[in-house]
Length: 275
Length: 188
Image (cartoon, rainbow over all chains, first blue to last red; front, side, top):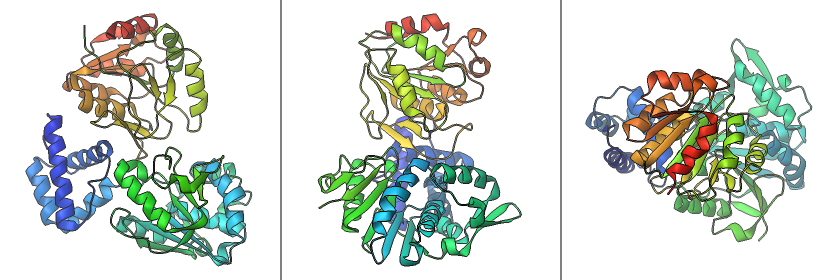
């Protein structure tokens, strides 16, 4: 790619995005450009292309390489109990309300490798709601879902997750939820028993169920305002009245068309649908 | 005098004290925004924003995603997110992998701003103990912007500005007490 000129490289990014849409049906044109461009440039350098033409050709002609492209430009950084205060609010305020329902359906949209879905599962288990719950965990990227379904987490990360768990108000022994297997922690079967992993593209696909809680954290920061609006409407169509929508710590519903139907909780980036 | 559309400050260990000394002497009308990216622990955002705003009458705010960038405003990158700038001069946040063991990373903001502001960008690298910011300053220079560092000799932790001086063609080396004047003079 032309690394000398910003205008030139901006144009080249647009060409790649229209290729991705035309050849593979993945629409990234509503993504914020700064972050997307950084990811694409990073991949270009990482895979040692010598020209934009070569990069584009490989992307257009090799579906296997497009899979890599998809894996590399989408962001799959996640943690168990990330933002412990957020999980404290779920545990103390939101989930107890959902516990009054005969059946609880939760959607984790943009679940990446599953850490958030597992965290929710642990909370539900500790509140004795897990048996009557089902967690749908979806992502655009099928490779991360394969990983998520395995429920194997590097043991080195478990110390941080354990600290997060305690900070979020967890009082059980966190290490009871997994078995150490060489350098990996294998989460117990009951932690994953009520999670269904499936691909879903927020940009192009419709609502597939009605939920009482939707979590979509640190996903819409990568979308432009128009796409954010579309995705919020999708969530609104997928949420029961009095259901909850949880966003990332720097995301907001404020500028959206659906915001007047929602009321924010004081303690977290969680909105309840009130009409 | 250099035309400046954005002034960006990157700092790590030992740089908070510098900011606390610089902020009180800044003019209240600046023709550009000041964008600050500091390495720190997650969850300490409100404390930092409060502390810095107690030192100046300029508005100090933690960046919201998609926020429009205004002049005469001090923006703080939130912890645990990379900060980037879009072509339309709005902020983007990004929760991707750490860069140089850091999120926010100074390299990420410098590189992103260099693409958008080109020669109208001035970046200042302060005290610190890692390599973050060096690649970013290189990109700033390639795109015609200015690269400035705090004098490593008087920095609380000299490593970061010293590495910048070794690897980048630095335009100015500033003492703490000269930084505010320097920023004020860029404004017109």
